[in-house]
Figure 1: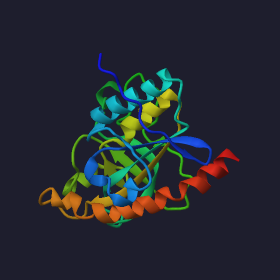
Figure 2 (figure 1 turned 90 degrees about the vertical axis):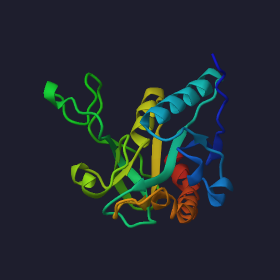
Figure 3 (figure 1 turned 90 degrees about the horizontal axis):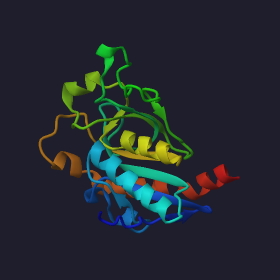
Figure 4 (figure 1 turned 45 degrees about the horizontal axis):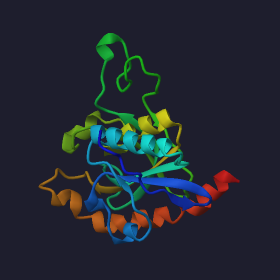
Length: 213
């Protein structure tokens, strides 16, 4: 079995923080100056697999993340482009066992609500997030009961719940109001979001310090 390297834990306010991101294009110079993240890859399967392997490797080594911070970009039809939000709650838009009597968004025979609440300790705006395996655009937002969409956070929320580690989600709005016309629709604002997400990360020491106190 391949060895899973230990991810970097960043000490903040006396706590060990694991930063998690999906993809290298979201990791610009401002974030690079602050931490080295665990990169999971894009999508809920990659996020669940890499997140679980990382937290298991830390546990096996006798180390522990006190907090996980998942951050990156998101789409939205209603939130302003370029703005950064805390994730107030996250849902999974791909799961639907309602023909068997389960609520849409709930994994059958698993105890979790449709909207999984996350910690929001930072003094910035918060919004509801929906995770799924497809890019949402245009009329696709009509079926989304959330303010933002991404591809990883719900999977990481389930992993963190399994390892009893609290999760903070930070998402910057990169796309959404107009149908995408290519990869640049996503990447155009990543440089700006790198700076804005770094500003949010700079608020963590005070916020986690208050929680520890």
